[in-house]
Length: 391
Image (cartoon, rainbow, N blue to C red):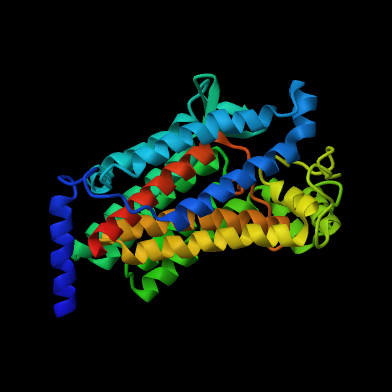
């Protein structure tokens, strides 16, 4: 009890002086977090440049067009937002929690307005933005994590009845599920549901409520999948990889061929055969297969090691966070990244169905990279605050 009281006293003291000393206290950067993300970004640019050189030249006449797009529309603005986020007092996010919830819904609704969204095949997930495009569900993913962290920390502090908390969470998730289904973006829906479940568990929910929420998320996802022939075919392909190898099973089978061709040491950077229009979506959700083909088992293992280090570091930051809100937010951010890694790579090696989820810091996607760097900036901010608190 004395230790808890002492910790609470130190936290209160930190919160009072944090603004006054912002910028005056020497910054103790988390170099493990910074270095890991930096290596991932550097590796990602090399992998993207190699994987997309052929399709980039065929489609635009420039071998490095997609590389340039990632650099200009993703990395550069993302780095700016990273440094801004790691300097803003993260307690402000909690004060504006209702705004983040409203923003989440507005971002999911705007792509459904006729004439606004950019349609890619049947998906309506992008809006034009100063000559580029924004995937609103990517931004909403972070605003959802911030709101949910603030809301759950308040529910625990105020002693709200667990049943009421569960009901409100289900209403919010149900509304978001409907909007994502209309886009449609079931892969993102699964990420949202998994994030809600993780944060609900970490917030200290009862076991029976956790099991109930998990059952509802799985049941809802099953309904969305089984009611769509396209998604149902993907599940059948996952269960039977050799089913329709020239149709619904084509991408996963070509990915497995690419990974198998890489063997232990790979065929060499730039020497992939699958990028010659054999493997679809090599710039986004299939890029890990190209990495495995060109770099082989050991390079792929090194990439997985980097993601593991990032997850462990993020978990430690969450454990040392100065208050429940920042702890939940750090947890949400690191799981937001890790879940994408699991879903993407799991699909490429045949352990999970294909969902179209990009590989963090690697796949082409300006909005995804900007959001990841912004989220990492918030994570760094929490780490810096914990360092000041325990210094």
